[in-house]
Length: 190
Picture (tube, rainbow, N blue to C red):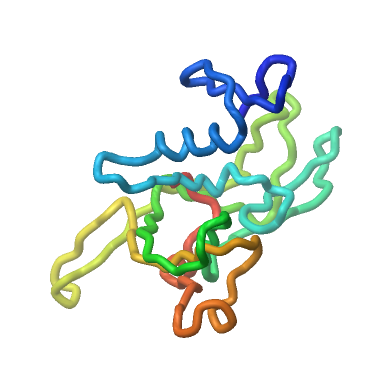
């Protein structure tokens, strides 16, 4: 989101239409643009591009201005489980959602590479980059299918408070913790 020129009246610029609207209206417009022809909201979570200093997803190394390693970050980081909590003024509920995982995966190497003095923005060997492939068999291993995306149905909590939803307290008998991405790289493009 980009603030409207001068930031007047708390309005934001909708770069698609050129309108100046409230932040709530702009958020709703962006969500509406992500609805497909079947009416499904498609949100692409590029975890490789998430804010890296939070430590929740992908935490790469940090460097001093002279190129030496300040903090090694994490390497070979994999997903243990995932939960979804949609916060809003709606009534609390649990709903099914489709989750897919694919794109390009990134794993950091154990030893952070040294900076390249000729190109300070590129660190050769920092990541192991590979396309995601999912293999499955329907006939006990006689033949295999290759897919570029893994999909599953997961539970999503809709609550009025941020934080991790607790199924035992808020939603008895609802399993919100999804393990279907267990051992996948935390850094993927879609």
